[in-house]
Image 1 (cartoon, helix red, strand yellow):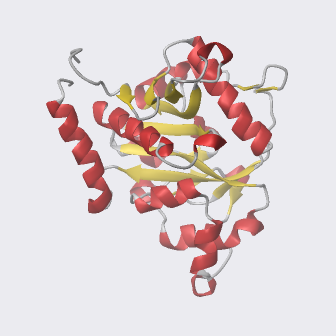
Image 2 (cartoon, rainbow, N blue to C red):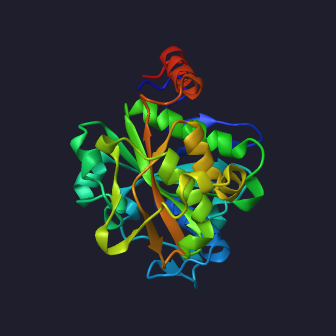
Length: 275
């Protein structure tokens, strides 16, 4: 890429917001600080990666990932306050270096690997509670679109979570996902047998659509609107206090309405001096 325009790793925003990839250990620690606030303080996550003294939620493999950051340039980097949104991204070449994807601990990902498509795994996504309304989330998604386009990613996937470890609480939403949004067999991860939690808890005719949609986390609804699918079976993650589903997004099969968003981004890249 030449330096004459915006790159896929840095995008300007309004009111001091921007997206870029983490550049150094300080950026990653700021992302871990945000993850602690969201996953530990809000959601009740525990486990060996939680550092209560430092206020960090860490993973030994964090250094092997790309970290897409939403940054508020008005906040102090020295205090690790500048990162207000994050996506942790693992393209397949980095997964090969690590020897696995993060989701390998929950799902059989062989169908995705056998597809021959270019893959990226999304994990640890979160946004600071003060930034969940308005344009902030859109900027983070635009940064993700730039990342996907720059690397010619064809399949995005990763776990998304329902809060709590009792699947029965989420029976309506899980059943709707199973009966209406299963990934095609050729791209369908399956929860590992030792932890497989059936999602078809309610018969299709008994699903209350309004209740199921209302109970579904906003992130999952957003991926479904973009044409996303889910794998078979849920995974109950007691360490993170969540019930997980595996989301799969074939970027070539997105609905025409939303695929246009990515095409517009691609057109902008072609005309702004980057490549």
